[in-house]
Length: 406
Image (cartoon, rainbow, N blue to C red):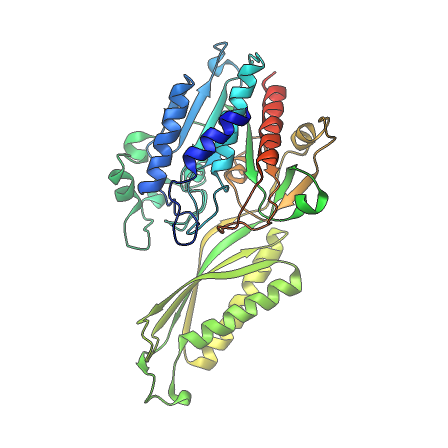
């Protein structure tokens, strides 16, 4: 198992990696991510798995050694291969590599599952190109319509359909979407995106819930003018409104124990010696409950609007995506967590979004396994996982699949 895992990881490690930062640029339907998809195709072909793919880039490779087909609810695992901009190596690919290694381990044990087991790769999980996280799984579950998805554009103005066509994908109209109606359980393994397992001294954990979260676009408009000749009191500067909004979001999140981040900003005309005419900024907000998320965004919006009135600027807030809270199947989580050689795995919440949350919200019983991240850092080149912990994760996933496949 260790040799297979290390071999696969070594093959993936260089793909999409920046020589400058050491981070990864694996945006969907572009060179590096397309190369990863080709790699996945080679891996499943070598294992003799049956491949099901749809028109938007979602793929499942099925293992059905006893030929049960659709007679029993299928068991699905896997994750995604795309990354955030300048991201870490483990977010997504660890779940895919671990799923393949877990299948190899089950085969070596002589396991003959009474349910089909699939290894999935969902498209555009991060939302790093088209701004909507878990795009592939949203489409496959019906949480997002193809009509709405076709209106999405990337930062260069490229429509989703054109991006798909550029890599030979026909879109949902011609290529269809994955049929997940026969999936009875989904188990996703993921690197932990925090330090909970480090603090607990545990290599692996099981998810209890996902915090609700959303992405909100703040469009702030003012009046472009000369930076030298325009008196401060004569300005309608949207940058001032944005600056106060970012500080307000930080303060409100700290007061409530929530998360609020402005991580992306666009400025027009973006000149050093010009008062800007427009600032567009994206707020990522996450809270412990749906009500708290709504309250946080409402307070930040109100404070931004009040500041805009004082600055002589205008504000429009658009919710680009909102994911409600997800409580994973508690009995499934317990069955995954208990009775392992090293004792029970801890059951912990996560503030990060995942395809698992989308499938759970669609009514598919879902569990998540986390592998310890010694740095606690994610969405960054510093994201990490140690080989012994990764191998414990593979064993934990294989044990889980074996239990569920009976």
